[in-house]
Image 1 (spheres, rainbow, N blue to C red):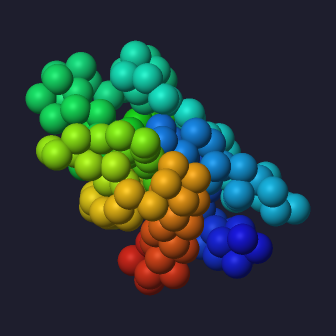
Image 2 (image 1 turned 90 degrees about the vertical axis):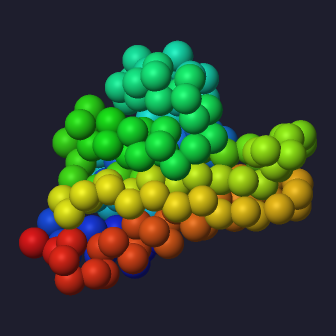
Length: 158
């Protein structure tokens, strides 16, 4: 994690997170590193739809049309994290850790949003029915990887 903090500091970028199914695990992983306050502003844990709306500005229409586990909601979460913080870079995670899910939205589906000064990208990863703890861990690692990739891509550096 020190590499992420060092990369953010070198790029003069502050990070925020917006988490649902990971419940703050990404924020915890980042802040577990000494010196993280130089590169991390805050984390939003928005487990309910109401929290996504109130804390991040996710539009109720987006939730109604696509559901909480969607790239559209992940996008609005990531953008809301930047808009409601002092960060220039954010990652958002929303998914179905399990147990459960449905045929349409199976267990292990996690949607990610990444907002930076160059815009927002989204993606969906199917981790599969590997168990709640494993999905949450895999989603956390993936989110940290997205942040690191953004910080090490020249277009994101100031």
